[in-house]
Every structure is written in C-alpha cells, then in structure tokens.
Length: 467
Image: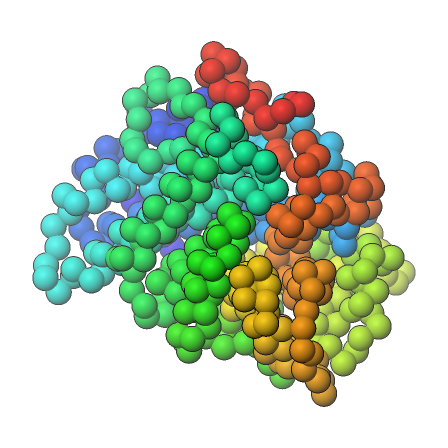
C-alpha cells in the first residue's frame, strides 16, 4: 500500500481522549469534504484504513495477530522483553499499554471510516465509475463491521458464553457517525453490538464486488468475515450458509501439501480471502508479528513443547503442517526455542509478513463447527476435505466431535489469533503456561477499558468487571 494517502493529511492519529477515538479530527487537518473529491481520493482513503491498522501496536500485523494464541496454552513468551509478554502472562491492567493501543487504533480506524462515509455521497463520479464507487463504499462498511467485531472480541464477552446478551454495558461504545468533539459515548448491550456488526456487513455485501481484489475486502471476504461473526453469535445456520457460499464460489482453493509451506512466504496465495499488504517501508517494525515469533526478535511467541499442539506437530510428519515449526533451539540463538514458522519475513526482513486476516481453511472449519450444531451429519465432510490437503494417505472419518474440530483449528490456525477465542466461545477453558487454567467466564478473558477513557468520560463509561 502506498503512503500517498489523503488519510495522511486529514486523518492524523491523536489518541488523547475518548472522543478522539470515536471522532475528533486534529485542528491542523484538512476537512474531509475538502480532501476527498474524486474516486482516486476515495481509494486512497480506503487504503489509509488498512495502513493505520498495519503499522501500530495491537494492530493486525502486530501483537493482535497472535493475541488469542498468547492467551491460550500452545505458546508462551521466552524472553522478558515485555512487549507481547504481558498478554500471555495475563498481567495487563487498565493502566497498561496493550489495552490502550488496542482501544486507540481500532476506534481511530472506525472514526476514519465514519469521516469518509459522512462525505462520500458528495463525490462526483461517472456512470462508468459507479461500480468502483459502490465497491469502495462497501469496503468501508465491511471495515467498520470487522473493526467493531474485533474490538468486541477483546473488550466484551463472547455472546455464546454469556447468560444475558441484553445485560447493560455488556457491549461496545458503538461508533457509527461523526460526533461532536465533546461527545461521550455509552456502552451498548452485547446484542446491540452484534446487531450493528451484522447491519454493516449486510450493507457492505450489497455494494461489494465479487471479483478478486488483492489487499482489499471483496464480497467473498466480507461473507467469510460475517460467517465468523455468526459463529461467535451462535447463529449456526447462518454461519454455515455463508461459509458454504464462500466455499462454492470457486475463486479460492485450499493449500495443498505441495504449496502449504511456501504459501507463508508469499503474498495473496490460493486461500487468501483477505490479507493486508505489508512492505519493507510500511510495517509495524519491532512490533511486527514476525519479530515476536523469532529468537532474535522479541521471542515472545514460542511453542510450549509439552502442549498438545506441539506434541501433535512434532510426532506427525505425514501432516504437512508439522513443517511449520522453526527450530531455533541450538547454541548461538539469543532466546533458544521452537517458534511458529508462519511469519518468516520477505526480503530477509522479519518485519514484512502479510497478516492473513481470513483464509479459506478457516471457512471450512467454521462450516464444520456450525454444521455440528445445526446439521451434525455434515460436519465431518468439511474436516475430511481439509485434511486431505494436509495429511499424506489420509482416510476419511465418518464423524467428528467438538473437541476434534477445536483441535483441528489449533493445528491449522495456530499463530493466527484464534485458539483461546475458540475455546471460550464454546464455554471451555484454556491451559495457559504461566497462569494455568483460564475458564471462559474468567474476568481476564476480557481486556480492561483504558482508565484514561474512563476518566475522560467523567466516569460515564462503565469499566469491565473486576478491573
């Protein structure tokens, strides 16, 4: 992505108050209505959302890419560099930087989306540009849906794991408009949060192109992302329907045993529904996910060698996924250990890895889990289809359990920000290396809202329990 964004002029980041996160535009910035006047400007502004969410702490190419893995039982921080380490040690408080940056970047990106949407219908375009205009508009709604969803995964409980989705202050402060600078938002219910997410996905899907568009959200990527959100919301029939539509579109195909390993050092590969384009110029630098997954980087995402995932990978050479262990355990390494090999870096640069925000393998696994709840006889078929492309001389199975599906997710999606969410979503615990068992209803499964935000709201913003 290029840095010649209108974004750079008009949507500068200032993380100084709650209203900043939701809306506030710096006084030195150009008004949106003066800056976005053409389709090219609109494209640059859409690029700017992706740029913002790929260069900072707790964004998609940084800590957030392994957030759920570090909170689970398969990975741990070897070093004491205290970058991503506090995530896996469960030491984060309402005063710490990880919750602050997560809250700041995600809400700033949503605010930028809202600013663009507030003026987008004033942009002149020709009849031949109608489809392009619609597509960029659809991408903005898809971004807003995804950003709200991922904020909810961090700062709210998962709907399938709570008794009351209508509980007061159980959801997010929803951001859907441009607000006055003194605006103080209040938290919605969890039900209202997910209703807004699905509303934005619905709008996006009515506008998005179905063509492949590397580095951008197209119709199929948005459908896959909605399928993921439906799964978290316990709407299994809808999750399965969306997943099947993505699988049946035939624009994407599962990695095979022949190309699985090499796919992690390449961009926009067969399974990639949506990934961000990270370059040597534009990346999160030392907070890049590849730097966490290396003994010569921060060394804060290493395999727990006694955990079920590593035990499986290290004893099943017939499974191509066993090749995704980076052995840096010998002499001469700063922090010796075994690390995930999914972020090898391009151009010999650990900073440069495209985060695969959603890929086709996950869609098959969503379908399997959703089918187990709604059409159980079909669940094994999705697992068989995936394993045939991973395991040499694989033989089909006739049925699967929830535990089978969750283990398959660990094997396929490790170091892709999934595992602890998967278990908590199903009211199951994870076994963390540092703190032991973390149940789905443990208050620490949800991040604290930064105390600065509570203070700046005059106490109107309700903190998560026990923080």
